[in-house]
Image (cartoon, rainbow, N blue to C red):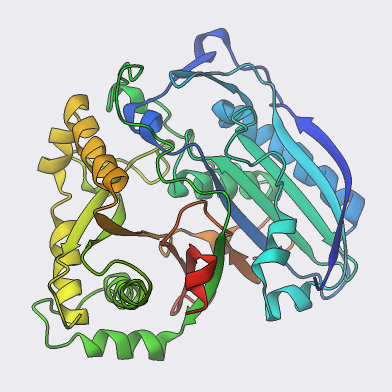
Length: 412
């Protein structure tokens, strides 16, 4: 451990104005209902090279602006009522102050997952605890730097949603008045269902132990080389994310063939943000879960695994998620059937799944609370095996791949 994290205080931050009675009940959409009961973690690191940020003033600013942000994003201050709606009762978000006895540069130069976890509100953000929907830990380094760790329940929103919220929070802290009010009425687009008798369980696949996370950084040159290696495939001019997904999928399958039953099928499950794929399209600031999964399969008979072939399977699967397909999913039973089929394949253990989610387009490096943009933004371990999160680098030309695997495989 390069730095010791000491918890100083904990409190609940409530919205600056009470939520009106007409907004007290926030109905979950079907996509909210079927989203996994986990927390989405993000950590923002800021340097204070000039030492001109008053710590006490900084904390007060963060608390006051968070309170104002919760007034706009009122469901985040509420509490779940089963898997049906959020009681927007203004119970608040957890705010933790921590002192870090160490230097920010030590953390970001040689990051280790066991260290990064300490900058997140870990007690609040556990799978079994569906009480608090949002928790923040502000970590103040001895050097004057700061790390803001944020966990948001995936049941209330997706990766795009948490970044929308954090950017709005930071804009309020800067005194920006041009903040767009988010749209929360997604239950009218994907109406909820009674899932009490459904065989689908949102918690399927969650693991809480024996998982390790490794970070791999791909700069522009590496990404260009990966794209070039697939130049002979049926996919012309693949995106960086498509090419990198195929590259990582290939290597994960090779590890699996060394350690596991080679007769299994292999599947890449790519999360797809459907805001821009709907008709009509929805704005980026639409708050909630607006995603589905694209599935690409590879049979176990495939002797040689070529990146170009994997790229073709991925491209076809992702492009199938279009407005016509989403219109079918808006029939709730069809959406539930789609997810139940995926869960059934997973439970039978006949298919080896590799899960991908790209956050590369999310404006995480625009989060400025008034003392500059972050020097580094990262995520943390997700409680799923074979899960890969892509996060863009600060320069915008590279990608960090955060790979979650079983402890005995990640060192293979």
